[in-house]
Image (cartoon, rainbow, N blue to C red):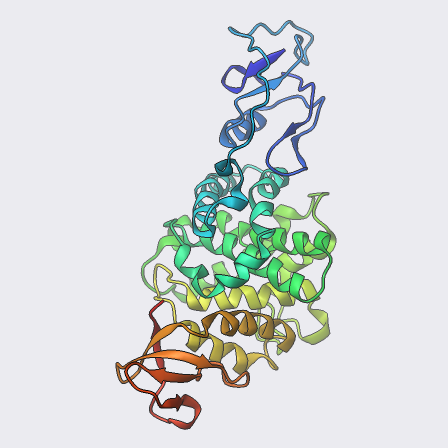
Length: 364
């Protein structure tokens, strides 16, 4: 019988797979529902499911109302997240992921099906992620930086992996790892996530334990590969040994981890955080290029640099002397110092040759 989700009770037996907006079932048939399952169904706006007349205990299930099965209606454009503006899609994910993150703070286990259902449609928007990468950090709506950072990191990590030639099943796993890499933050002092000043040394030490906490939270998830779990543990490791929690160097850091490291660092530097304003895209490009042979791997850094520079040509900026200009060309070795045309002037200015001139901010 078909029953509204608000009438379900623990012990109900699902008769058919419950699917969301991806091909992967949210809940499998013959699952005995728990309070957590019911909350998830309501959270993802599933209005009704087919369940048995008998509970798992053997007693009869008699809801107040049994719904008639509705005929399928054609989907409208708004039913497809892939047809939403990217910023709107990310904002929707933030709202829903905040509830998932809060459940972790309440010591509930990770429901990987729920996370996958939420993030995979975004990961599949590869061309839009590339085109809007220079704007991605401006799409934050959640007051919880970790919620936005996890979402954006998942999108960027999957994009990097795809551009490097990883097959889809792998870049989906890499995106999931990025989405879950900060789950361990839920186990710490929640006040640290919204603190408006820099963390004290003791708080910083506590924060640096989060990769280990995240790893423990995902360790037993069968649908997450061992490589993805390792990436979660190692996403703050750096090739030169300056990272944490283990201070690994070079080849000891998994390739998935190296992808997450670059995506995580780019977004951390460019985004506004409670205690620190984000740097300009141009400053961050300079930092990444400087570290691409020491802390990071160059091929992964260059995926980000190429995506940014390809879509910043023609954009307008403010120079450090307050003049406005249009970007004409990028030098791939020094992407933070493009060739520009100052507004109202015909002459091109090569910023690599101007010691006291740089890009101050992006206008559009």
